[in-house]
Image (cartoon, rainbow, N blue to C red):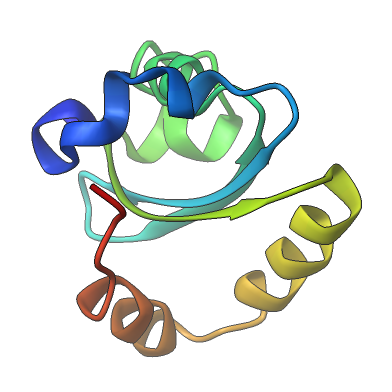
Length: 102
């Protein structure tokens, strides 16, 4: 579960409406799902209940493995498009070198 991966997961930091989160979730089959949201913990719970996206409904459950914080939707969306263009191995490099804020 995502809360096991990152101690900060359930903090108020993850609910700040002034921020957007780009996130990568690893699906049960090892594939990655990339998205953006205001509410990171709520969005991941949606994915794991099968209501977050068709892709994660078919490939879930998911675990949070990476995130970035942006001040607005526009910047988060630009980054989402960049990340979605990466290969699986390039996304894996992002994930493997990720150190979440404490």
